[in-house]
Structures are given as structure tokens and as C-alpha cells.
Image (tube, rainbow, N blue to C red; front, side, top):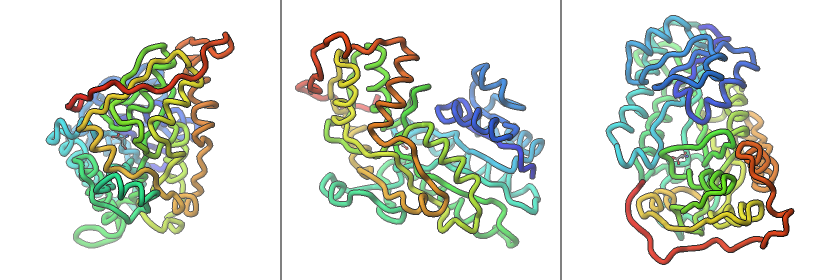
Length: 357
Ligand code: SER
């Protein structure tokens, strides 16, 4: 294995946009794979980019064999809301794609197993109802591992297989993969917008407000979930990738920056963008997914084992990271200085409609 080469799958997604430059700064040669061509500014930072599906096993195998990456960030995935609409695609990409990548890496003989960094999700948790969710508060890694959605099932299975492969080699011998997973909360980036996820309402609400557009939030006001900013998520990936195996008390870690309800996010957004038009119109299928996820997670193990220390709590995420970056991006002025009306209440329309999209 080449320990200065990092393979990034799903490289053109939200994480890839910040992870690839960070890996370059860390001195890695980055080999990137995505379904579509990467934007020029990302492509220029990679030593090779391959436009292919994670399910194109021959192409992936050829790429891996030529570069022999010592570090793998397997970011390619179909997120939770899209997975419910197309479970076959979700299974193929999230499970088969991951399993094939494990196989390709296992079959390459190496004294030092590659580090395989796997973005898992709060979707692996399944709380049965709102009352239990509230009573439970912050969940620990080994609690409520009974996902109610396809995406959570996919991620939990891959966590289990990865943990197994970090412990043993099928057929005997030393473990062939140094598997490490992070269960990400909802991620919010100022640089990109997500697609196909359930936590997407938070970034969409903030971006829409900064662009001066109205937004209809697809979960109820009281929906509370854990979140983190994308820069903190990228730091967490790099910290876990660099941790000594002997410091890891588990192969799967919770992380979080803060927990907030949709209405708290709305109110915070309105402080900065008082003219923003934000409505709440819960979409049952997406609401059901959000209701089954915990309102917060306990990240004590990640803090203790590999020094997780996010920079952004809720205040810092919005006030210091998102709002300044989004004002620069969209060119929106600070309306509060112009003697505007002050914070408005977040509004609910009378009816809600079914469906996922
Ligand atoms: N952000 C992901 C989703 O909503 C969860 O990890 O699907």
C-alpha cells in the first residue's frame, strides 16, 4: 500500500469539495472517483480522477490496483430520502458498492492494511416514537441500532461488515482492512447544498434565506436533530484517519456539533435575514424518517479516543461560519442594519401534503 495516496469515492459530493483540498494540504496524492466529472478546481488537485459508477467493479478495481491507496474515504452513497424512493439503487450503491470495495482491497496483499474511512449516519438509529425520542435524549453508539429506513439498514450492515473485517480475515490471516466509521449527524456546508437527504432542510433553509428566496420546510417545527458544520466534519474525518489503532475503543463513532429544532434554526436564520420567508409544511414520509432519528448523540468516545473537538456550536455555526460565508457567496447585505422589522415568527401553512420529494 502507498500510505501517501488517498482514494476518495463519491468525490464530487458535498464532503469531497472540502475533503480533497484538505488532503492535498496534508500531503496526500488524491485519486478521485465519481459518477460525473469533478469541477475543474477539484480535478486540478487530484493525481487522477475517474468518471465511473462505484458499481463499475472492473474500473474501480483497475484504479485501486494501479494506485494501491493506503487511505480510502468511501463517500459514494445514496442518502436517506432518495433511498426510500429507490431502495434497489440504495442497496446497490450503499451495500454492494461498499462490499466490492472491501473485496478489492482485501485481495491486494499488503503488510499494512489500508485505512478505510466510512461515513455512516444517525440513520442507523431507530427510535419508535416521539416520546421515546425525547426521553432518550443523546444516544450512545450501541443503543437503538434498529433503523427504520433503507439507508440506515444499508449503513448499519456496512458498519458491521467493516468492523468484522477489521477484526479478522475471511479464511484466516491478519485483518486486511483497518475500518473506521463516523456516524454523521446532518451536515451543513456554506459551499454546497445536499440532495436526497432528510436533514437537508437545515442547509436548504439557510441557503434560501441568504439568497432571498422563500423556503417550505418539509419537517415540523419541533423536529430536533443533531447537526455539524462541514468544516468540522472534514476535521473529524482527518482526525479519525490519523488516529492510532491502539487508541480506538470501537470502530464506529458518534459525532455532533450541536442539536437544534427546525424552529430554532428558523428563528436563528430570521435574526440574520429578517425578510426571509420560511414556511413549515411537513411531508409525512420525510417526517417519519426524521422522527425515528435521535434528537442528539453522545460523542464522548470520539472526544476521548481521537480528540474530536468541533469548532462550531449552534451560535458559531450560524453566526460565524454560515452567515458570513453565505453573504459573501450570494452577495446579500446585512438587512438588520437598515432598520428592518426585526425577527418574524416562523409560519405554518394550514395543510400538509404526502410524498417524499
Ligand atoms: N444527512 C443524511 C441524510 O439526511 C443522514 O446522515 O440522509
